[in-house]
Amino acid sequence: MKKRFMPLLLLTLISVLFLSTTAEAVTTNQWYTKASSFKKIEKAAKKKNKPYILFFYTDWCGYCKKMNKNYLSKEKIQHILSKYYRIKINPEKGEAEGNLAQKKGVQGFPDFRVVHPSGISIKVHPFKRSGSLTVKEFIQELEAALKGES
Image 1 (cartoon, rainbow, N blue to C red):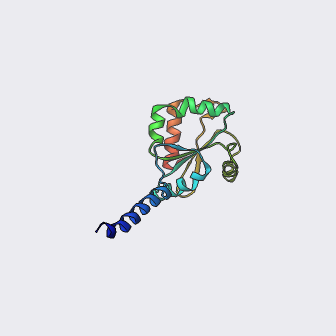
Image 2: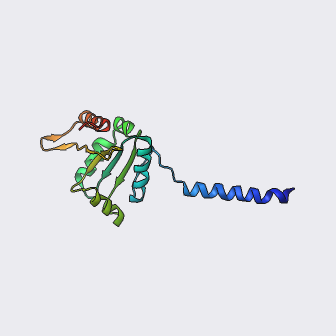
């Protein structure tokens, strides 16, 4: 009897192992950082009919560091963003990342966008000629962009 079920058990184990390694599900509980994750994020967001966050930065960019420290690290903003798929790309980390930034028309850093399933992309930028937004103002702009309002 054991010999009869052994092939079935082996086939089941191989199937489970194969599915667990090939089906990489994306979640909203982290920032993805590789261009290879972009299509997965885009597809998952479209499937749920929700916008996703696309953030381009570089390590040397002072405004990128300020954006992380003064805005993205704030609990209220993290809470809002935790409900959405997010991808944070440094175009200098690889060819695919650079190509993605070029394809998306990135011309400066930081480049922080809310991308809707329709393809509409709304930039949210806390640094203005008149000065930086407060955290509250940034949240208002972010929430408006998430609703599709520019």
